[in-house]
Length: 299
Image (tube, rainbow, N blue to C red; front, top):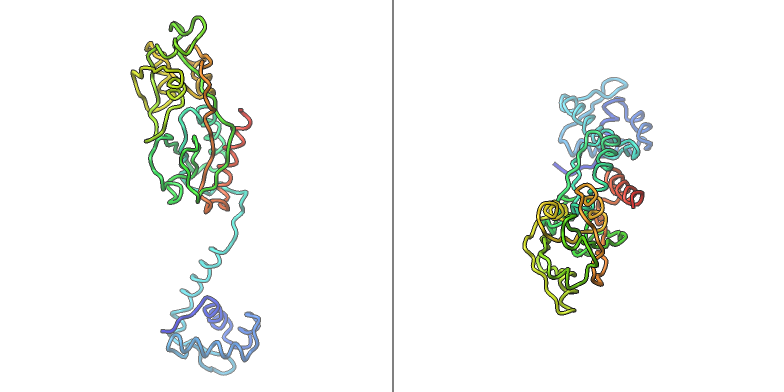
């Protein structure tokens, strides 16, 4: 069987519906000779006369009758694929959106994003993966929709939106020695610390700043996230370093003491990244714009 395209099938559908070369030509906005030529091509493609003269009309052969309904369904499906859905109506979207983010970053935003998602896309859901979830190809291969993090993972394919940097603060229990008096670099280094696990090869700015002063701290415990570190501080005599938003939000809830670090530390970069193939997708665009709006509103 020779190849054919959708336009040829549309002509067959018109011929079967009208039973007339002239009427089919008018429906397809073609000349009658052009439609006659198309019918000849259809007969060659399907190896069947398809339509034969019966008085003033053309009668469909049994083969043509078999083709009529499948052709109509195929054309309807093709039209549905081409049709533009209303980008403002996302109520029928059924997707699981995956955001990779530092746990503390979504601490102040996650509930609001989930609330808005339930209103705009009630059939969809949200999953948050930790920033140290190692999946370098996740954005490119569609396993991750948005990556909200420190910006250490660089991929030239990605669309990257820089966001305001995060500052680190120190956090201890209210009864800790560092909760009283001036916190010096020496006192800070002498304390026992809880640290958040880092990505392979990532250098901790706190340790670099201490080393520049000839100091070194003792990390007594390593945990998966800043939130976990603050929960530990509430129960153990340890010091944690956490992004400012996380430190203040969790510190207030847990009765922790928050203080400025006695070290000249660079701000922690923050950026939002996604793969460019998601740019035009209405649901994905809504998700990233909503996330950015919530972050801007809440500072």
